[in-house]
Amino acid sequence: MSVLEATALNKSFSLENEQLNVLSDINLSLNKGEFVAIVGFSGSGKTTLISALAGLIESDSGGVLFNNKELTSPNPDIGVVFQSYSLMPWLSVEGNIALAVDATSDGVSKSERMSVVNHYIDMVGLTHARSRKPAELSGGMRQRVALARALSIKPEVLLLDEPLSALDALTRSRLQDELAIICEKEKRSIILITNDVDEAILLADRVIPLTPGPGATLDKEFTVGFARPRDRSELNNDETYIELRSSIIKHLMSMNDESSSSDTEVLKAPTIVPITKAKKVPAIVQDSMVGKPNQYLHFSQTEKTYPTPDGPLTVVEDFNLSLEKGEFVTLIGHSGCGKSTVLSMAAGLNDISKGGIVLDGTHITTTGPDRAVVFQAPSLMPWLTAYQNVALGVDKVYPKTSKAERTEVIEYYLSKVGLADAMHRQAADLSNGMRQRVGIARAFALSPKLLLLDEPFGMLDSVTRWELQDVLMEVWERTKVTTICVTHDVDEAILLGDRVVMMSNGPRANVGNIMRVDLPRPRSRDALLTHPDYYAYREELYGFLEAYEGGANPDQELLDAISKKRQKRVQQQQNNNPSLRQSGSDVVCVDTTVNRVNLNAAVKRKEVS
Image (cartoon, rainbow, N blue to C red; front, top):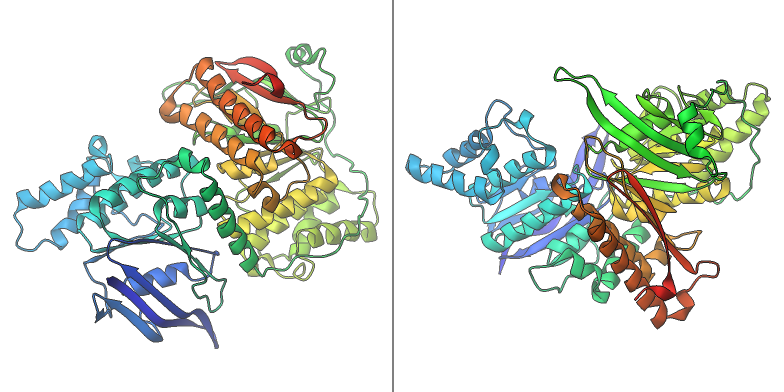
C-alpha cells in the first residue's frame, strides 16, 4: 500500500530572466514500511525533491499524495532530517528534542512528553550527553540529535536528505548501523537521499538513481534483496552484493555526461627551478636514513606539539615513514588522529616540533615550490579564470622559461583534467568539481617533487569524486610524482595507493599499520570493481578502522589476524583463478607499526594457510 506518492512532478526556479528546470516528470511510490534510497549527482535536485515530498515547496505541475490526499503544506506525520543539523544552539540535547515533542503533543501530559524525549535520547545513544548544547557535540552526535528529534514526533514517513554525508568514514558507518537498527524497531516508511552506494545497499529495499540536471528525473531502479539485519562485513564477502554494487556504480558513471579532453599529446614540462635553498638535514634524521638508499621522502621521529592553556598537547608523536620516489601513499585514520597535521608539516605549512622530514636530501623547514598541495576546498582566486589561477603558480616556478613555454604547460594540464573548453571561465562560475580540477591542474603544473592531497574530493558527490579520482590517476600515471593523499574514503585509499598508511588514534598519534595494495596499475575503477582481491583489501582496512574505534589501542596479535584474513582470501581467489596472479608479485608485503615500533613482514603467498 502506497503511503507517499509523487506523480508527474515538475519543478523549476526563476533564475534572472530564465527558468531553470530542476525536476522533470518525477514518479515515485513509497509503500508502507519500505525503505527507498535515491542516489544522484551534486546539484541534480535531490534536496528540491525532498522538499517537494515534505510539502515544503509547491510543484509547478503534478503533485504529491500522502495517504491518498494531496500534500500542499508540511505535515507532522512526515519527518525530515537535512544534511545541516538545524539545531537550536542555546538548547541542550534534551531541549532540542523536547521542542519538537511539545509542538506536536497537544493534550499530552508533561510526564508523557518527557518519557518520549527520554526514549529517543536513549535510542540514539546520547543519554550521557543529554545536558550538552550543540557546540559541545561532535558532528556525528549533532546528527543523532537531529534524527532523534525527527523520530520523536513519531512520523509515518521519514525523509532523510544526506544526513551522514559530512561525517568521517567510521562515524558514518556507525550511524548507518544505528539507523538500520532504529528503522527495524520503528518500522517507518523512509526515503533516504545519499551519495554513498554502500549506504544505499546497506539500508534500502530499493535504490533509485536520479539523473543529472537540469530536468533531473528518476532512472532505472535496483532491488536490494538481502535479508535484515545486514552485516557490512558479510556483505563484503557476498558475490551478489559485489555484483549489485558494481552494477549501480557503473550505471551512475554511465549517466555522467561531463565531457573530458581526448587530447593525448605528451608535453614535456620545463625543469622546475625551486625558489628555496636546500636545508641541512638534522643529525638524528641522517642517522635514521643510513643504509636506506631508496628513501626519497623520509619522516623520522616527527612530532607536532601545540601549546594549550592546559599545557602542551602532542598531536603527532614519533611518526616514522619512508616513501620511494614515485610512490603513491594514502593516509587514513579516525578524525582527530593528525593526518592533516602530518601533511601540513610535509608541506612546510606547520613547524615540526621534533624530528624531521627530508625530501630528496633536503630538510623541510618551510614551504617551497618543490611541494604542491591540493586541499579539500580548491582555494582559487574567484575573480581569476581557471587559466589565470594555474598561471599564478607556473609563472613563479618557471622564471627562466618563455611565455609560450609557460602557456604550453598551463594549457596541457588544464586539458588533462577536462577543462580545455572552460579554462578562460572565471573560477566563481565553475562548479565545485570543476574548481577542484583547476586545483589538481595547478598542482601538477608546478612539476613538484612531492604532491600532497588533503581530502581533495571530500566535498564532492560520489560520481564527481569517482570521475576526479580517474582524472588524478590518469595524470599521475604520466608524471609518477611522489604523492601522499589524506582521505576518509576506504575505497579511495585502495584505488589510489601503493600503500595505505593508517594512523593510530590521537593524541600522540603515529603510524598504526601499513597495508600494501598489490593490485595492478594502471588501475581503472571498472576493473577493480570486478577484481575479487579488491574486496579483500576493503575488508582488511575496515577491520583495522574498527580495531582502532573509540580510542582503542589494539595489540599486534589482533592486527596480524586481520592482515592474515585478507591474505588467505586473496590466496583462495588466486587458487580458484590462476590468471589473477601477477608476474613479479609473488610476495605480499604487510607492514605494520604498533605502539611506535615498526614491524615489517613479507609473507609469501604460497606460505599463507
